[in-house]
Length: 529
Image (cartoon, rainbow, N blue to C red; front, side, top):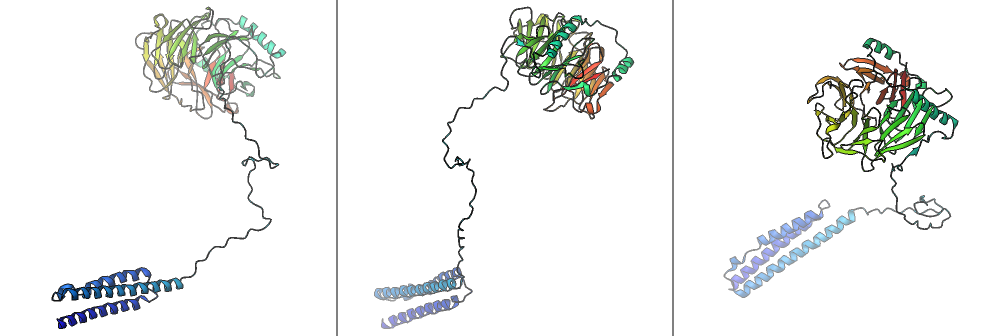
């Protein structure tokens, strides 16, 4: 038993000596300056693991008594404790050495505040401080009232008062008196034989433009143009996007302006006609749901038709005496209006098969027929078969692939129909026999993409020439073009420096060689022979 105990003690002392020796080696090795703290900790843990592995297991001393085994275990634990303690002390000393070798962290010194130094400027308005240094009182918040940009004008007749000139001036009174007298002597346009195309071209070549025949007539884009049928004097009417109607007397003296601007509507004037029965009357239709008649002899704009719940797009005369009208709505409805009936309402309201109506035009000979231009379809209706609940067209022209801007019968016989479409095509149909189908005669390639800021093109017939149409152009230099029904170009109106913009809306005098075109800035360009 004594021999066994001494053997165990010698083994334990050897083990402890090995542990101390290994720890001393680790301590001497870690004192180098190039070893960092993390490697020392890792090696220390590895040394402890190796010490535990090298500690002799208790199975070798299975012959010892329980007392000796317990004592041996305590001695082993104490040896491990002292070894770990020495390693931790070595690591602490190494941390201290590394910390001493590092340069001290430099702290940025705050600059001293100089006396009498100018500070950063701050807005007294944003600080809500009065310039004298007194705080401003809090402004009470008031509810913002949003005003309608285009308020409806009051119902009833409006005085014909020019906005750009004095209504009591002798010049304006003479203007009204002159046109009231000229309208009485204006005879009805009788049908004449169509001039041949050569003489027609020669007359067109004689039409010129100069600085005196270009004038700003309205504020904003021109949406409609009309020419007075007088054979003696020249009067041009233009309807604007702003709701204005401008009248320009081109036969005025050079010192006089000759332009009179009125405000009978609050929204764009899309349709404008002189009355075929009394040229002293000019009828205007607007998006604001009103149709008015300007009377030169009475100097008023009389209200013919009013519907504040709807928006109008176009109108035309059903009878030659101009007593009955047909009105197209933007929502696809059609109204029949009789001016002889008291009041400003319709006689009949018809729901058409179109979702939207842009233009309405009556057949010049068979006046029971009228044509409408919708979104992508053009329909011909018979007024004798209109049903308020819903009417089906007699004929539908479905050749168009995009939005349609207008559709008009030829002016003398109505044997042709011209349409303007956003697919850059002008189409001419044969309407000499109104049956279930109307054949397509000609397709003319023409750029009709005017964009957002220009008024859309509308190809119209020359009232003197049954087979020729007039349309604006996007080409450079700027021009107005005339095409034959066969698709051939007849003439182009160039103006040089007098015509530098696009004339989207154009109209020709019914008997004289006078062309008026309106652009998107309110200017009217007139070509005269």
